[in-house]
Amino acid sequence: MSDHAHIRSVLPHRHPILLVDQIEEIEHFDHIVTVKAVTGSEPCYAGMAETTDPRRFAYPRSLMVESFGQSGALLWLESIRREGRELTGSLIFAAAKNVTFHRAAYPGDTLRHVAHIEQIVGDNAFLRGQTLVDGELAADYGSVIAVVRQTESLDGRQAPVASQLAAIPRQHTMEEQ
Amino acid sequence: MNGALHKSMAPAAALVLDEPVLTTSATAPSPVPSTAHRAAPLKAIDEYRILSAHEITAEKLVRADDPYLEGHYPDFTIYPGVFVIESVTQTVHALVEQTWESRIEIELTAIKSVRFTSPVLVGDTLRIRCLCTYVEDNRLTVKADCHIDRNELDPDLDDAGAGAASDRAARMTLEFRLVRADAHE
Image 1 (cartoon, chains in turn brown, red):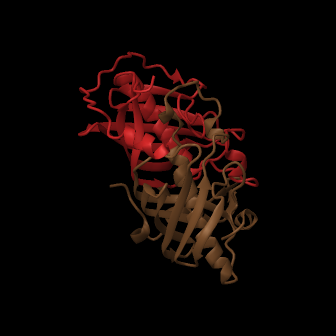
Image 2 (tube, one colour):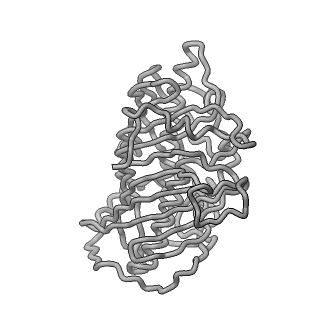
Image 3 (tube, chains in turn brown, green):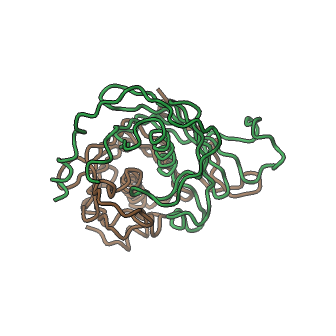
């Protein structure tokens, strides 16, 4: 169990896109269980046309993936910190493969993410896992790659260097099929 | 209650679709209305252009005041990778609205693969191109290619000569399910 202040000390994300509320369980370098409560007051429900169709209030799947990715990053960064190391730079979603969605979540639901580290190669973390809602499978993540890239100058402006993303060893990249 | 709702929604009841027919002849860019008809993190495309019943392009100018971006990240803003997926999803939605029955909704069922190759930053214009293939069981497979026009590049550069002016931001293959939108309305 971990408080929200601790999560904020590890993840660079902030309101309103800090999408992990609590750590329920963590085994460093192995897996993490986190929760995120979906509420009707989140920005994704702002500006919606009036409707009687409840399906239109399904929590966006893009945000569900973001919440899972943050959970995996939390496991990764927290594990590294435990070894006395820190990764500095920008946390980036680099790739994913075989992500499937099975049921929707609505305001009032709680997303429970279970994220596993498959392997860590340099500044790249390879994750897999699931999102559960009411004990039912909501999403399955076959493979997700998160990377940390240094923020440095690119033609006069600060940016993560794209060429570094392309430098991920080929056996670990997930090319289009 | 939500569990019951979920069960009542699947599978889509007897939805049979013919091959898509383009109901609009508009080839000029169409603006996207600001009012959303379903929950979305942001209006992820500004305008779209339908090329055929299977192909569509769209654009999104990334702004510092776009929803959610203030927290991603406070000291250096990056358009999240999942928002690029959202931009593609809204592009596909625009095509479905115009080429299938108007009351068909799409539901993202799978990210078969996605790879992000360059960060998308404030001031960049994200250019999306989607090729959609109808497959069995009311499913749509979408291959999307996303490029960015960098905000600091010479404005005199010709868009058509995109090689120098544009970087690939992402490629992805997504799968959607087509469902009737009128069940509760």
